[in-house]
Length: 73
Image (cartoon, rainbow, N blue to C red):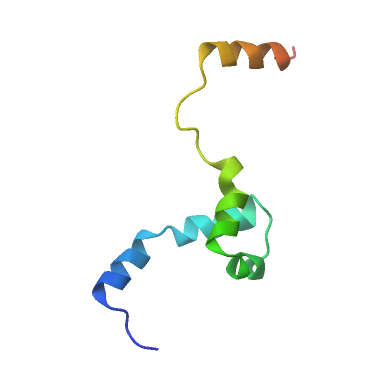
């Protein structure tokens, strides 16, 4: 196996492979083989529902959720 060019190595190091793999295996319950066989697009689509919100929910949305799912005492 040949060594990667410096720009290739730095871009590869920037991608969060460990986090992607852990999330796919632990959250999506994919097998390691399934993770490595999936295309980047398939992984992105599978992980989309778990992506962080770009902004916090509005007060109206919080009120709606609190009505729908009240705390039980």
